[in-house]
Amino acid sequence: MKKLKNIEDKIIPIVFFATLILIWEMVSRIEIVPTYILPAPTTIIKTLITTMPKLMEHAYITAMEAVVGFIISIIFAMIIAISMDSIPVVRKAIYPLIITSQTIPIITIAPLFAIWFGFGYLPKIVIVVLVCFFPITLSLLEGLSSVETELLNLIKSMGASKIELYKIVKIPAALPSFFSGLKISATYSIMGATIGEWVGGKNGLGVYMMRVKQSFATDKVFAVIIVITLLSVMILKLISFIEKKSMPWIYGNKK
Amino acid sequence: MNKIEISNVTKKFGSLHTLDNVCIDLEQNQFVTILGPSGSGKSTLFNIIAGLLKPDEGRVLIEGEDYTSKTGRVSYMHQKDLLLPWKNILENVCVPLVLKGSSKVEAEKKALEYFKLFGLAGFEKSYPNQLSGGMRQRAALLRTYLFSNDIMLLDEPFGGLDAMTKQKMQQWVLEVFKNLKSSILFITHDIDEAIFLSDKIYVFSERPASVKAEFEVNIPRPRDNDTLTSTQFNEMKKKILKLF
Image 1 (cartoon, chains in turn orange, purple):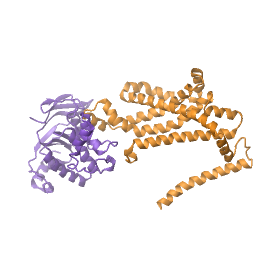
Image 2 (cartoon, rainbow over the protein chains, first blue to last red):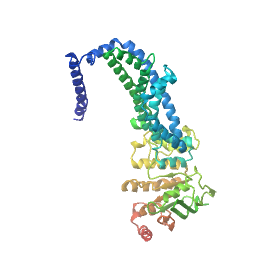
Image 3 (cartoon, each protein chain N blue to C red):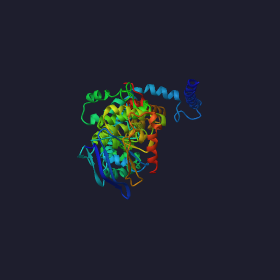
Image 4 (tube, one colour):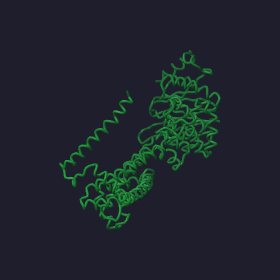
């Protein structure tokens, strides 16, 4: 019975999704909506295949910017979160600043970065860092401070130093929360890089997207959207994989 | 010389007067229990003995040396097992040894000698969440033992277990410590448990906690289920109940 229900759980969303695509295909084929506004899914797939080499070139640049920015954010987040957690004065000083900085819509300051850092990779990476840094820092901070006082006291009573306390207790305890922050930021990283590229540059999916948009090649715009989505999913899957490997006590111990 | 000597310890948290002039002695190989109502500051006393809190007045002597607000000499076991979920049982019980500077290999070798005695054999590589409550407490007890095998502070270690498991664990503790030669300071609010396990009982008053009465428990060892219904046991229990 249970197995049957599992199959049902999988089939229902697939059928629903396929129906939506089918309706879209029909709407486009009988030109209820003109094809230059809404190209048919089959056309999009065809375009995706024919423009694949070009898309790959741009995707590589965007992915590179996103990954570099993402890694820099992780390093920053670790330094800031650990110092905020261990030194109360730092926490009090920085916390409001971090929160406030996040209320600024990133797209509004992207042009500013183009002025400051030019049209190369740097402004894109800066934007990725800005969007990714916040969720990673906050989730890590939350994880670090989630440890029970009693547990900390116990390990302290065994003579653990502050560094040992982080190594043995705080950092492993923060991992689940840290990874949920990473997963949120992972999708932001590709988005951040793309927004950075919209403002200007030579390469990247965002640049390419602007170019094909100007020539009303809607099918190509859709193809870019698919590639961006796939990139995000890939990064997300990679992080889930690392998450499972690094927390065997939660996901079963296959060593 | 006493293993632990607590003299005139007083502690206030702001306006909250928690401990008032507490004096307690723990002799070699003794099992001493502090019996008192919940929230009477028993755990605060343990934090002071472990060196995590500084008393406002008074001193903590361990084997004649002043250990007031110094950590690293004695550790305690809590009502919650407080095992690290991300370490397997073997790694968990090795934590105190590694903190003291042993290599991982040395620590594991030493710890493994006790797995059978503590009823944990075969579960070395299991994570805490794969074990029953009773087993987790035994692992926590082994960790405490490996940290300071001569003196152990046990803070309501069986408080979170169901009555039947608790009874079994008490029997087991008596059995194990007959062989291990540790001096034990034990906290509980369970009168039966106190009488069953101890050589000496200190009864604490409500907050601010001070020693209200002191009893020597002269029930012969080994003790078993029959002890719980013996005349001596009941007389002792009557005497203690009069205080509340």
